[in-house]
Image (cartoon, rainbow, N blue to C red):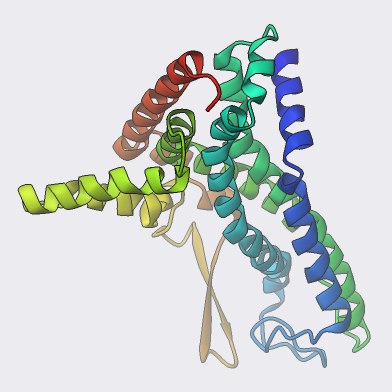
Length: 302
């Protein structure tokens, strides 16, 4: 366990962008709220204190704000995480630091699994943690600015705790769902001698085109689009009944807002972890990871 802790700490030492990029994003967002224009629209807040929403909707105010902030972070996070996984083993061989790490009593399995954990779990945790701090800072600033017009603030401790559960569940399920992609990236990082980004794209593209031209089917393409697109919704009750979703009306019933009744009813871990797509993805990802470990034991510097 100590080896894994030190290996993860090593990644933070060598890749300061893990925390620096989200910190810069959070700082810019906070500064923009300090001096920028704050606009929520009548659907959420009226700065004059005449909101058209029912009183019970106030508990979802922090959900809305936290969602906006976190979505911005979650757009940047997978781009950096993908780049990190493609570079992590390749970079060790390119700068020849692999010779130093192989001289230590640390197995290649530990090294690969530690880097995989950083790409799939640690980086998302760092982004969500900084997104949380940004949300609290933005919430505090906006509450003060709204308070200047006599309206209530956004802070709701119960809602904040619920969002923590939701984000932790999201990190766990995203790590499992994208395990085959992460496994493929780390395999390419262990195998390629140059142009890792190109090698990560060309084989899937060749497989997709070869299937279409030779067989006239698109099984691989559909599976890949499902993995990259809407397939992840299996982790949630997207089409739940009234116990999962609630409709709020505004402006005399003219506008409707569709919100989950709670984060607990929104999550569907049993359906997600028993889904064939999830189980097949775990098996494929595990295969790529094992192959990356084998390559790591055989490859030296470039």
